[in-house]
Length: 103
Image 1 (cartoon, helix red, strand yellow):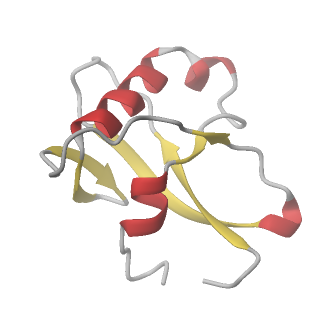
Image 2 (cartoon, rainbow, N blue to C red):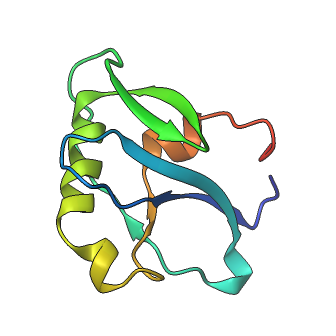
């Protein structure tokens, strides 16, 4: 990943609130000024005990991140502005998830 890039999470809609968070981790060029929302959440207690799907693979996330992503998904942002606020920067995923094809 180059210096002028950012890793963003594209959250997919769900049928039910309790469905796993399904998403794609993508790389965007900062020079193209991508529109995204920065997700602010409390990390909570140590340990990853929830599953979030990134690029078709299971990733262990903290309960607080999974809950924040589910609330964001349920809030209607995905339906109201599907091309805009679907991209999210979330520290735990944007920094720590390793997807070989993304580098």
